[in-house]
Image (tube, rainbow, N blue to C red; front, side):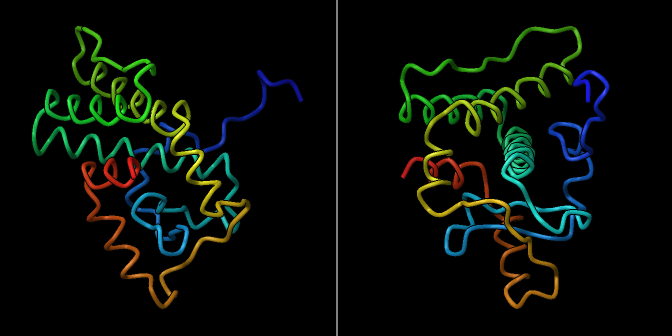
Length: 168
């Protein structure tokens, strides 16, 4: 199939961002939920690594957005820069590009940070493999015994806590 005519998956970041909060299923590595937990759409009975990385980027994007809302873009940028500098001082740092459309500029900035920390920086990928992130995996549904605890963990994890876990 020609790549230019292949349909785009509905689970591609950032296209699923607005639907992400409504996904009912969850997946994480047992005991390491804070860093790896994601919401999963009900249509996915198995989660591939590629789709997982799209979901975790979406989650990180939302945490960055929440951090900006609770503090400021400048404070959030400083927190992200500090963490990235500790992980890899040579890594390129995303910056907020000037644009007439501030909403677009902030969205692009969040996407750049999500890509940098999940895909471009070695730390997340290394920890995922080290702790047993072997795909495909099966997400849990709301009937799972620890589901409510996992959901609370997902929803209550701040960007600051996530970055601290990544830096360990």
